[in-house]
Amino acid sequence: MKNFIELFRLIRILSTGDAYSGKQLEEYLEISLSVLNQHIQTLRHWGLEIKFQTIKGYYLLSPIELLDEKKILRDLPEGRIKVLALVDSTNQYLLDNIETLRSGDACVAEHQTAGRGRRGREWVSPFGQNLYLSMFWRLERGTASAVGLSLVIGILITEVLHNLGGLDIRVKWPNDLYYRDKKLAGVLVELLGKKFKPAQVIIGMGLNINNTLSNKGIEQNWSHLKEAGITIDRNKLTVLLLLKLRSQLIVFEKTGLSTFISKWNELDNYLNRPVKLILGNQQIQGISRGIDQYGGLLLETKGGIKTYQIGDISLRGR
Ligand code: ATP
Ligand code: BTN
Image 1: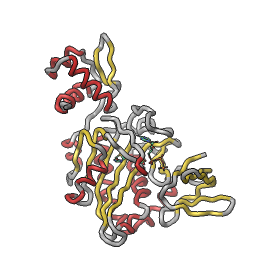
Image 2 (image 1 turned 135 degrees about the vertical axis):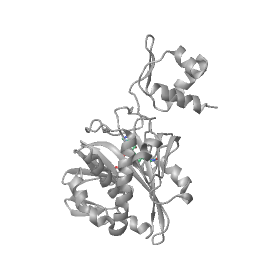
Image 3 (image 1 turned 45 degrees about the vertical axis):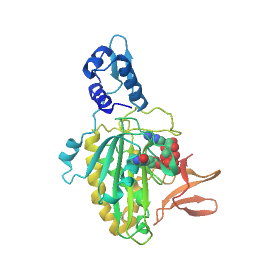
Image 4 (image 1 turned 60 degrees about the vertical axis):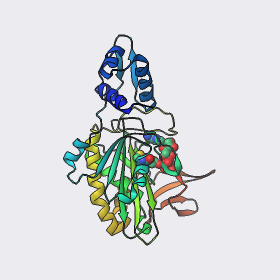
């Protein structure tokens, strides 16, 4: 059985980036050398890059500012955020607790052991490095009113990041944020309910903050906020994103996608650029011409402009 108290104390000690000898860590934690070694292995498995040098000892390659519920609550008067150290998936955590949730309730985690993207793909989620945030919302008018929601969430996150100085960050249909043609963040919207009866939705987002991902599990070029010109404490970012989402989803519920379409076109990474759509084994090449009123992609080919609805389709540049 893992001793989580010891593991989190060890993370806290190392989080500053200072180096400690094995002996010091054994003494601070009152554990043996073999237990220390096991703990270091576990933390590495969670994605923490712990280095060891004979003279310096153990240290984290890059220091981390840990998530802190108190810090978040200071700037989020409404509260309703749960900070988790370890979870399978923040989306799954909210799904598991869905009966107790109100619109705007959220959770954020240091590490996801089973972070997921669309169609069950893995979202790589190393400890303490990036942002893994999910929020619950109740759609009074049913799943039919969720049309275009993942696009709107992409726009809202991008607006927050533009305000922080990341002006080259753009949206990619249907659920990603890109920086210079590289994936910076992904949005996963999971819907429960009936078309015209009150429905429930879990909105999850994964945002890379630092250059600390290994390429394992990532089959495409990726980026991070630092590269996009933003240095920000994850606690502050959590607050800014939740304030934005909580206020703008009220607007989305009233107006649907229509208020956001022009914004999408302003922010669209591939607007009027050559792209390919991947549908299983099939590929269709064309020029991306933005989105229609339902959030479908408009693709121009020799045959004219055709709409592709969000589903089992991936869009890529070419
Ligand atoms: P689509 O265009 O269909 O959304 P996608 O390849 O981006 O295609 P998603 O399901 O949206 O697929 O996202 C999951 C994919 O994102 C994974 O298959 C992996 O390639 C990539 N990925 C996983 N973790 C990260 C991460 N932390 N940062 C960037 N990309 C990641
Ligand atoms: C994608 O690009 O397909 C979406 C990735 C979404 C990842 C986030 S991380 C927080 C939340 N919890 C999950 O398991 N997934 C989303």
